[in-house]
Amino acid sequence: MPRSWTMLAVVLALAASALAAGARADGLPPGVAERSLAFLTHDGLVLSARLTLPQGEAPRAGVVLLHGSGATDMDQTVGPELTSTGRVEKPLRQLAWRLAREGFAVLRYNKRGTDTDSRLDDAHLIETASLGDLVADARAAVALLRSTGLVPADRIVLVGHSEGSIIGSLVAAADPQIAGLACLAPLAHSLRDILHYQLVDRIAAWTWELVDADHDGRLTRDEIANAPRYHLPLSSLDADGDGTVDHQELARGLEREWDRFAAEQTRVSPWLAQHFALEPNLTRFPRLSIPIQLFHGEEDAQSPVSESRALMQALANRPRESGWAATLDTFPGLGHGFSPPLAKDRPTVGPIDAGALETIAHRLSATYLAGSLLANR
Image (cartoon, rainbow, N blue to C red; front, side, top):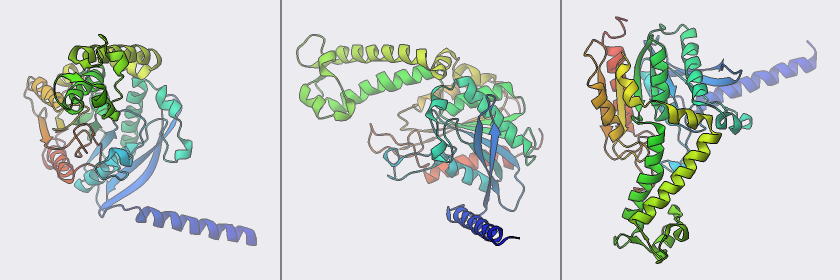
């Protein structure tokens, strides 16, 4: 072998050793192993994925993790400004590692437009994606896990966060082999209703509680100036020109902005247009003949805990056949990412609280691993 080739081989070997050491140094917990995978989407994209496994034992069931809305990677990485710790956090990685320790093979994958190598990110791919694209990607991820042969085809559970509860229910409705659906901070009503809550109802409630300092039911210029996060345009809201904004003026202004947002965004976003036309989980969940587990933070400001309670009420009417159980676990003091808010109007989306993580893991283990449910499928 020429000397140059020998040197190249040494360099490559050293690089491989460094990468392996880096992966170990990255902090995989004891009892967990991972391997990198990828899959092809229906429209020709390649999405990176990662399979997390219990080390030294065969997995007893599989899980596919489904992200919440927006451009996010397989870990649902959250920047420090949106976490309770002030550090970058990776909630879906947390969940994958913990569920693997229970005995699940857990697959997570990058959303289209978000690559493990940030230099390959392409926001255009998520901005132009439809809800149908995201559902197809989830189905492809399920197919990828099945193709590994590590778990039987009918022992795969979908675990979706927020919008992932909608995508999960759509995948499960079309795939009779799906073993169950677990939803973290799920939506009962349509995304249109949830966005209206976030952009109108929630903003109004926070405004009167937190901006109206003297609680007299009128917003003054000074009160608005002292609450810069709210960006309330006094001049456009003050319809009668008296220099203050009352309840009716604020409500009309927020509804006006909502109407403009809904009209513009449904025109340019196939994702939002399809969501707005979709029936809600509230009517789709009761038709699913699988176990369903719901988990919700009681301080969730994005999708309030009343969403899960409404789903439980709807699910109570399902026929009580074997394997059709539905459960709800709620967590005081935790928000949409199962982390505590920094303030009432400053929600966080990670990391997952340790107690909540244990509850989720134990609930899924008891439902899908400890009993006879999957053994009898």
